Length: 213
Image 1 (spheres, rainbow, N blue to C red):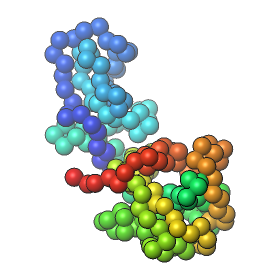
Image 2: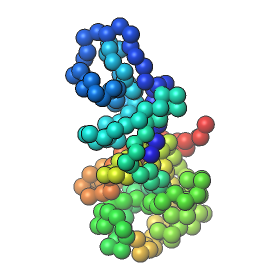
Image 3: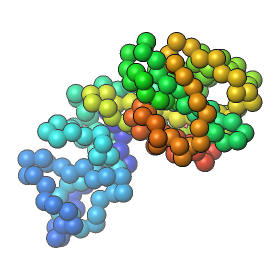
């Protein structure tokens, strides 16, 4: 799959200086630097904005500088939505995945589902109704964020995060979940969750609605 990164493209810094990190393997051809961006005194090609959790030792990565993409040939992209429901007391709903689902059985998650429509908001509202029984009039969009890229083995989840305020906390679980709990956000660390759920929460915890450009 192709993953976007933040820099304008791989660039050669023409005046090599003593590096501030280990020299790259000459066979690698390019060094991927984490989201803080590359140091200014490296004398080899760098890519800024790539997250280390995207990559695995020994993998080949294609770099498309003109489009700002990393090509990870062995990785399958999986677009999903994740929706945190929040009550007036600021607790959020965690759902325990049942033994009937195909992945992450027994782990805790927010409302989530595969993105089957072009508009993530449409899928988010569908999943809320299916998984909790709450109708659209019982929820209100409070925040959203740009997609997060979260890798787990050979899958890269493209997570579209949302946070909805709820007007009712009368939840009706479907077959995908065996239990639901309203917890304070800081309590999430006590639970065995799906990958990087706390990070997804932080993306929408205090933000506004993300507007696509």
